[in-house]
Length: 539
Image (cartoon, rainbow, N blue to C red; front, side, top):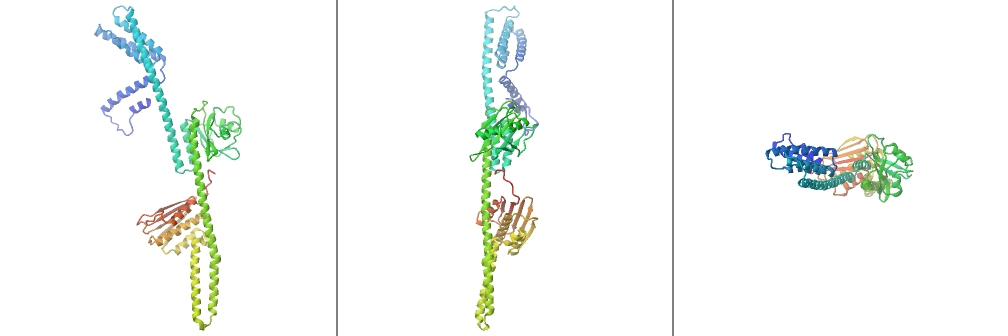
């Protein structure tokens, strides 16, 4: 009721400052009614002395009013006036104050009913007292029922608000999980949201280690108390919530750590925490860790803390499972790409060391045979010369094929010289802008090289481009590559295996490939590949 009252009295930020008189007259009665209803149906009874004071004030005011009305109309009793105070006091205060008010009001009524004659109690006076008492009892009973219903409604509303708040918090964390946020981001969000929803100021995510200890992966600390640093390890011997969850695999609670044994319990006392509840985090059937909500208050946490905390634990488990699955998929794709690169490298080496060398040797042999042919066999000499020229052409074609399979210059000189070699061989003029300060991992160089090679091939064959610009740079922990042409555009990344294969290759390294190709505006490929290996958070 108080919340509604404040919303009636205050104005939204979008409401203009000038309020019409009609609006003011509409709001004032509503606010007054809200105050009266809130006062009469409040779940806690006001102090008894306040009820006595209010009853006395009502009786005094009613007596003055009756006295004045008796001056205007001496024949009327006006006893109904005294029922107003009886109803108000009986509604708000307990039965004792209501009975006292009824008796006092009945005496005042009888006195003024006989006034100015002397007050002599009789049977009518007793009947008036009985009527006042019945009215007080009924009003008090009805008010008690109304208060109980109001209290129940407030309780249900509070429970609904609590459920809605927790569902909103769970949705926020679930959104992070769905977006593929890192494990550390999800852990921090879970610690923050669970502490806020449970009404505590401390929440901790602990991951179990193979040696039986626990490592803190996220913590939300109570202001004014020592902090629990991420990465701190706790030995779990003795009495503590993490050990209890590790042993049973079920939620656990401790309402006091004052006399608990073990270094973990001593650390908890050092942090100023007293009570706590923990819920297990189970990932793919194995106990991964525990989420613990703690408080510095001596009162135990509510009985519904375990199931509410378990919902956050389930979200953490989902996030960890997703991260592990993504890491495994990325590693699998990287292994496939590495295996394919190794096969291409081996094929290029076999071609260079085998077929190409044999062709060169055969060509030299034929040249020797050609020079040994007598002049009178000019036709044979011409045929041998044509065979040698054909072998030279085949060797050149084979050399180009081997370069496309895996360019040797990439392994020897790095990405910069390899891109320059691509630009020299391109049938479309290429403008290079290179800012490659250091050598990067070979897998990143190979991916960038093939992106550039595919882009040059497409620009020459399909885009009708007259110029291509390649910009490559290393910036921080990433390799950036951009290839732009001025062709017809309209390339569809989902059609054909070339761009799809490049996307798989880049993403297998944890990178991103963005293709923009609007009709008539050329085609742009932007690649971002990490060149610093990040340590996994879920392994």
